[in-house]
Image (cartoon, rainbow, N blue to C red):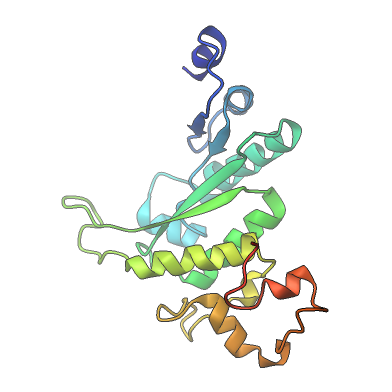
Amino acid sequence: TAEILRKRYEYKGYIHLKILPGADPYLIRKASLVASRISLNMEAPSTRYLSKISREKDFSKNLLRTLKYISKVNKEIPLPAGITTQFVVGAAGEKDKEILGFSYYLYKNHNLTRIYYSGFIPVINTPLENLPACNPQREVRLYQADILIRRYGFTSAEIPYDEKGNLILEKDPKLLWAEKNPSFFPVEINKASFEELIRVPGIGFK
């Protein structure tokens, strides 16, 4: 379908193709020639958690191996909008520290453009119907922490967590980091580097 759009109808716009776990490498390469963005959803940060939400998917063999291959192809044939993945949050008891640690690994080692965090919502007549829905504020905090890692130069270890390894819902993670690192302040704005300035709460790229 994507080839027909590109070649027959000369469509120049955005096409996002999702790759299924364990897809044939040949098809992944074909997809990279016509897509703007390619994604494969990891769903969980490890085998342990994936097994709780899916019996069919193999974390290492089907998911991570395929994502690594997509990353390899993207280095050879850079996609205009890069590659992405997604996690389901709150269905398997995973900790935010584990999710963001794995996200940091993917950003650093496999050059992902972006990672999405989708809060779990139970569906009636499914095996997980009795689980509680993910708190929407948890999703917000994950995106805020992700931006600190992806754009502001933070490591996953610098993100503040509670004693259980989860983000603190009541406060922005950048502000929390500042409160936990008083020795970093005050920042002399006439001498500070760009990287130092953007760590100040309230100061962003613009």
